[in-house]
Length: 377
Ligand SMILES: NC(=O)c1ccc[n+]([C@@H]2O[C@H](COP(=O)([O-])OP(=O)(O)OC[C@H]3O[C@@H](n4cnc5c(N)ncnc54)[C@H](O)[C@@H]3O)[C@@H](O)[C@H]2O)c1
Ligand SMILES: [Zn+2]
Image 1: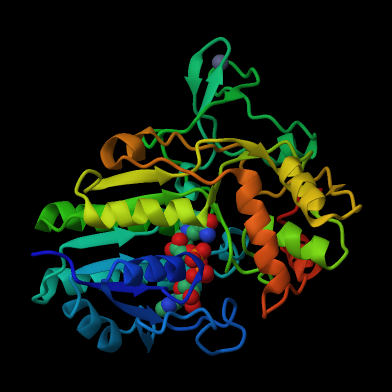
Image 2 (image 1 turned 180 degrees about the vertical axis):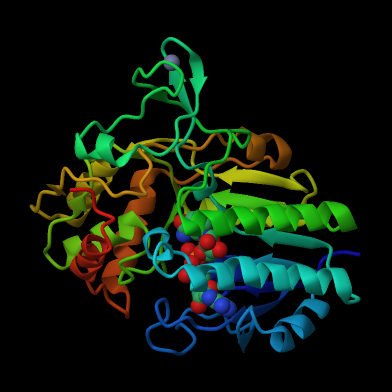
């Protein structure tokens, strides 16, 4: 049987809403389950971009009475509803574990115990499951350092050291097979979600796939949520005439992937079987430093404001992680198409015309980090 009806949890959010549009355009019937989490949806109403051809149900993924009937009515479930901030997860432990791990536990409990016709489950995992990315030590070869210790950060010695010989290591593209290190509660819950869904999928023969999103950027990403992605935070600082604040020396490497490329890959995951039962990186496969992101955004916005390099690290941050996207290429034929400059230009155009505006809440978030002792002195 062909998939006709897709349930998207978290479908009012940033990534989910773009997928909803793509699925509607491909003539799927789409139902969204979303509780309109106040930190994301400050108006408390469905966002203006909600797709009129999809059905929207307000409810919590921890509530069986609403989740179960929707799962039973669907041919595929895309499970994106989650609490999404790394920093915040370190002091709202109960909420993060409850929504992310708990909500996924409930979905699986429904799939195992109720009569359903779900043919595919796609669960949002994250680059966060890697901890530090993959490295290559000049003496030892492949090396997989863990999180840098507080005294290393306090000494402003930013580059990770090889666990075997102690030399500074070079970042390389991170494949799915890299040993996974979870260094914060959010990433732990993403790991649980992925492992649980793939395990139940294999055990009961329900095709399941776990996209590991790298840094997804594009229209509709929250500009006012200070716990959200770094590009949005920098942009909202610049649009409010404040300098973007860069932790460490700004040399941290990340993989920024356009929402449009992400949606293309998600559609392939739903429609094809090549990546079933696997975790799969979704990235651009290209590296960019945090300082370069701040500068590129400043240039594209036309701002004279220079980024502020804080020269202080956060206890939970990794130094580098860039995707090896060969698994998505070989199993699904995925190829990213949007360049960083084109994608950022689109993000800026959207931010300038966004009805919600960009409220800069960064200083409050920085204060919170200081108070919790997560900013290394
Ligand atoms: N944006 C990224 O770069 C990125 C990177 C890695 C992983 N992810 C994962 O992708 C998924 C989607 O992320 P996003 O960036 O679109 O986030 P988002 O916050 O924009 O969307 C999440 C949606 O889930 C909803 N939600 C939260 N708690 C809920 C609950 N208890 N019940 C029902 N709905 C709930 C929110 O209202 C929101 O609409 C998440 O699972 C996230 O962990 C995102
Ligand atoms: Zn070494």
